[in-house]
Amino acid sequence: MQLFKKRDFGTFISDTFSFFRLYGKNYFKNYILLNGLLLILLVLIFIFGYKELFMQAFASNKGGESYYFESYFQENLGIFIITGIITFIVFMALMIINYLYPVFYMKKLAQGQKNIKVDDIMSEFKANAGKIGKLLLGLIFIVTPLSLIVVGISYALILIIIGIFLLLLVLPVMINVINFLMFDYFNSSRGFFASLSYSIRSQFSYSNAREGSPFWKYWGATLVIYIIIYVITTVFTMIPMIFFMVKLTTSAPDGSFEQNPFSGGFGILLFVTYGVSLLFSFLLSNLMYVNSGLMYFDSRRDLHQQVDLQEIDTIGINE
Image (cartoon, rainbow, N blue to C red; front, side, top):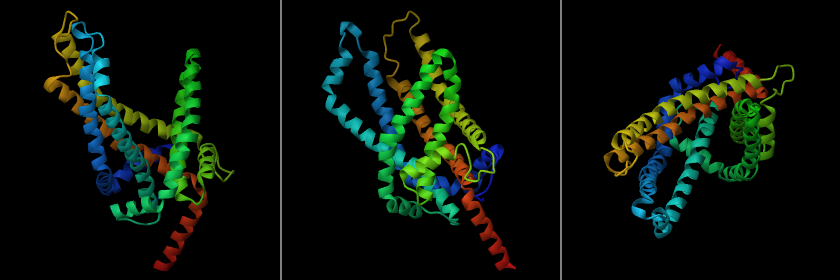
């Protein structure tokens, strides 16, 4: 698949799925080798940690013990702190790999490499360790606060209806800006602020002023992929929720719950299902990242001509 080429709205969607048809086996093999242990650990923390938390919360204030949950929390404060720290470390490590793996994988493809291995991706992480640290600081202290301000204003405007449309307009753009930032930061010689500037400008115009704005095709492609991911994950999570609601209504028709619905086999099944759903959400997020990568390579019109010239030279050599 040629990455550096001009694409329209429909091509972004079709090429995203074509990418996984061509490279999916190799892509997810390396992804699982890199992320597998962290994903399993995060799912286990979610299943057992949240199951225990919900069980205690649901059982609170029973039998006249009005501070049952508060006392349980105070007695196990050390465990909560340790679990919270471990969860944060695992989640941050998972986020770094989950976000940057597609960037480095597509970078290798753009360089002409076909059979990409885990060592190739790991070498990118090691070689760019300093840049990764700067990226994290920039995302935490610059991008995140600005994003929260924009989203907060949009939510505030929901009261006058226009905020709903503004959120629908702004969120895909914010996703694109963040993803473009990561792709450009590791696929160019630009620094963090220069890449951030490029990621914003490229949403509205190409470097070649003669072409029209790519805004709507980027916005539309991201929105479609987001809806696909949202529908799949929602359907998956709605199944255990339906069973949970049925259990509540059938086991306690008078409104009093003698048994904790999170206990026993049903509680385990419920949280295992949500844990697997969390796992699938991480896997499905790769659709969004690859789609953003294709849009980024579309925006790099300065490299399209170089690729075309290389292909012409290759044809001349073959002849």
